Length: 221
Image 1 (cartoon, one colour):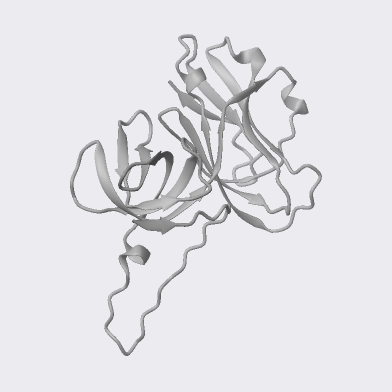
Image 2: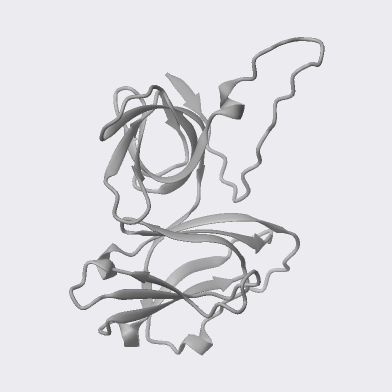
């Protein structure tokens, strides 16, 4: 069983392998044939680390069995996994080859009674926002700071009984000096809200520099 060390970073740096012009060598598949997915770490089996993959929307879950172990990752934490399927089999369980595993911001939807105007919502640069099962996933760019920040998805408690619930990406640098921009991945479990009978639409507001004309993003049940 291989041992894979987890690196707790926001930015995922791709390392490219270059072959010599004088030699006809095969490039390792770890650098050419792989996929990036946000998945849930389920813990260890007798073979290695196990993950759960959910496709977009309400796709069925796929259990991913690896032969590596990971450190500094808690069970049920969301991670960004770089991997490839070990074979061409299909089904609810698949064997995989893992090339990288990085923890991301992983949290559940929170709520507040405070006015949305009072929430700290420092700007981000949106890359993608999508739902997989009970999770709202986010890929964006944030400004680097030397210390921890507040980064969470918060529901306006005054709208929780409405068919449309307004949520805000709270982003607080806590007074730290911001420098360069870097990639950030986050995943928020919204299952407690998503399964409410009265709920129909999750509306997300964020302070985005990429698409400033877009006021919000709706996820319809």
